[in-house]
Image 1 (cartoon, one colour):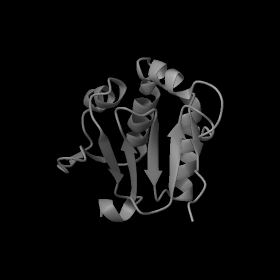
Image 2 (spheres, one colour):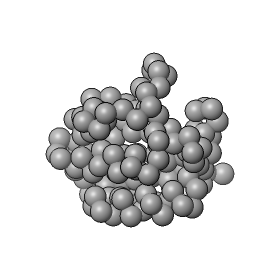
Image 3 (cartoon, rainbow, N blue to C red):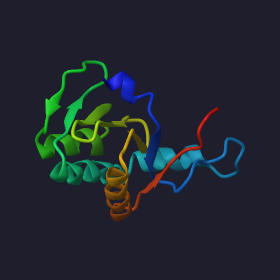
Image 4 (cartoon, rainbow, N blue to C red):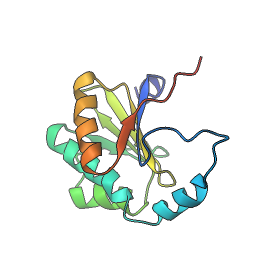
Length: 138
């Protein structure tokens, strides 16, 4: 099921409002490195915790694929905010998947419904983050 969801259309919850162009100016990597060491990742953890108020979630590390239903909030927060683990978060009621990698400042949302997108948009904004859809690759 997870493999199937990874091939569906996806959205990104990011610290920036759109993708940085490959040949753009600026110092994206230096800024990204700075934010990886800052409290910014707490916003991603808060989104998942608040989302868990609306939906049951199942969480696993991609390498193990051992799913844990509705993990304790303090554990989920630590895994994300403290860059402890790469995670896959399944929302069975929505048939959607969220991935979060410890070395990235974004989460990817696969196969979200319009209702889930509206909720995620509000939760992201409340955490100072953005929800956007990358251009489709042809």
